[in-house]
Structures are given as C-alpha cells and as structure tokens.
Image 1 (tube, rainbow, N blue to C red):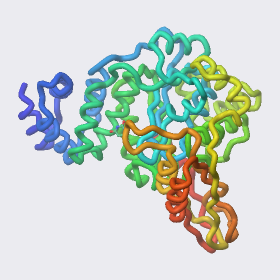
Image 2 (cartoon, rainbow, N blue to C red; image 1 turned 45 degrees about the vertical axis):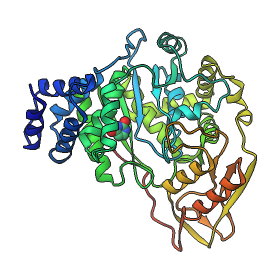
Image 3 (cartoon, helix red, strand yellow; image 1 turned 30 degrees about the horizontal axis):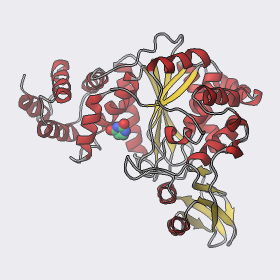
Image 4 (cartoon, protein in one colour; image 1 turned 90 degrees about the horizontal axis):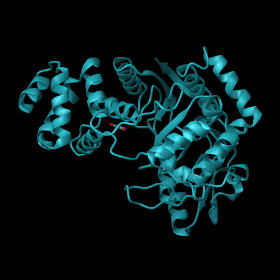
Length: 434
Ligand code: URA
C-alpha cells in the first residue's frame, strides 16, 4: 500500500477501505508516514468528507493506536460524558456525582481549560490536595469503591489523535467534521466507555457557531457510535451566554455544589438533569427521560448528590469539608462590579467575551504551560432576558491583581447587549440527536 495512492483516492472523492485507513493511522503513529502526506490527506478529507463507515474505521484505528482503558472490572454500563467546551460549563462537576449517586459508574478522564473555555480538571484542583493523577489501579478501585472518579487524561491514550490534532491545528484542517468527530470519539472509546453522552455546545462561546454546524457534528458522532457499537446520544445546548452565573475555577465549583444541593442556577440545573437523565437511560437505569429526571431530583433533594461529590473529593486526596463548607475554597482578594449602562433588558451576554475576561483575570490559560489562579473569575448577577436599571450591578469580578482587574473590566464593557423590549426566550437545549 502507498500513502500517495490513498491521498489520490480521497482527493478524487472515493471511499477508502478499512485496510487503507488502518494503514495510514498506523503509519502516521509510527512515523513511517510523514506530516506532509498526512496534511495532504487531511485537506482532501476537508473537501471530500468521509462516509460514516470510513469515519467509524478512522475512529477505531485512532482509539487503538495506543493504550486503551479496560473498565470491565467495574460492574455496570460505563456511560461517559463529553462537552465540546464552553464558558461557565461546570456540568461534569454536577453530573458525575449525580449520576454516580443514582448507580451509574463514572470513570471519567477530563481535560484542562485552554483559551476562553475552562476545563474540569483545573476546576477540581480548587479543592486543596485534590489529586488529578492516579494510577490506573487507584482509578479503577475508586470507581469500584464509591462509583465515581474524575482524573486527568493519563497514559499513552490515542497517540494518533494527539499527532493528527497538532497537525490539523497548523494546516487549517481542524474544521473537517469527520476529523473532529473521530478525534473526540476515539478518546472516549480508548477511555473505555460503553455508552457516550455528548454535550455539543453551540453559539458565540462555542467551537460550533451555528446550529447547523453543531447538528452536523452531533450527527457525525452519533453515527460513529452506532458504527462502532457504543450507544451515543448528543444534546445540542446553548453557549451564547455563559452557563450558570459563575465563570472561573473555585467560583464554578461553588456553583456546582449549590446545584448538587438543589440551589443552583436554573439553566445549569436544567442541563444537568437533561444530560443526567439520558445517561441513566443509556446505562439502563431509567426507561424514559421523565423517569430519569425524577430519580435525579430525588437524589438531589436527599442530599446524596452532595455526599457523592464529598466522597470523591476525599477519595482523591482533598478534604470533604470543603464540599459542605464551600467558603473554604480559594477566594480572591479584590472585587469590582460591572454595572448596567442603561435601563432596559439584557439582550445578550457574550460568552466568549466573558471567557476572555476571566482568562485576563488569570482563571484560564492561553498556552498549555500557563499557571492559573484558581480563586479569580466572574460572577454574573443577571442573565439574558432580565430587566436591568442603569447603574445596577451586572457582574462581580474577583481578582488578585489590580492591573488585571482593570484590564478585565475593560473587556467586560463589551460583554452586555441591551434592548428596550424583552428579547424572545432562547432555548437552552436546541436538539437531541440519537
Ligand atoms: N476537540 C477534540 O478533541 N478534537 C477536535 O478535533 C476538536 C475538538
């Protein structure tokens, strides 16, 4: 087999065989196929696309390119969750303990934040002493013992994806839907998932800016799931404004704890229940969304959801008291408010701008190596559609550096849009793809 023939075949819009796809993934991983040939192939995919069968084959070849996690020692259907990323998206912090308390084993690997969107692993480090690195056996044992563990991505998982993603980043081929879909799904499959719940974010603060794009990606990933025998459901949810009120690490953890206790923001609670209920269905513990939601609402009301998070924090080296007394979490020394410029309604809160402002404060990173400040961030006081009066506080910025605070305040100036009439309600969940 020759890579040049595979490139030409894709260039001409033909379907590659399973063997050809395996050849190119294996060859790229072991270095026998050079970057320039892989770049040409990725560009051909961008223009020509891939069939569902090809995309499924690419996903499995990448999933099998390195180590794979074997979760079979954990009884039950292991349902993983993945978000395409957003601002204030602390859903995993709520959903993981919540569905674990309902009986779904959650053995989850999460990522760190990059750019304007945050990452679960950074947020969890707000608990002093919390270990995001565990040995494979510690990770599996914790899930067998308490039903939940959330750790950073470890080991040599999907090296083909790591290499290809870095190449796509510098060859203008990130946008190819089959490549995004196989990149995400290969990581979930290598991490041992039996079933997968995808939260595909759409809007100004998301990777996918339009509903059409989000739906295309969701459909491609759900199709891969059925090609490779992993039940997959995608929820397409709004990321035009931040999710909940809090943006920043410890601030988001605090809001997630409030949500697990039943006192969270409406949108975050709604999304967590919608996702959690479908995870229960994927795991065979509920036969309808309503039944799943009912179970989860009972668990929240009973206090078991908060207890499950406390157990997880304790098991991973933190102190469970930080969950019951969230005022013990890191706190910033300075605060300043953004106030409304006029009377009227909030027509929008630009998630990307809020995300950038929180990065300016130090809550996020622009390069992989940048240190972050767990205490800083932004707490909104209003959401889209709310009535406001000129001078009323719209958000509080939490900072540890006066200069950064001033810079972030300047950024936040652009975050709010006003209207004289109440804007039409925007859905939180646009569509379920299954
Ligand atoms: N996230 C991923 O993991 N892969 C992509 O290709 C895009 C987003």
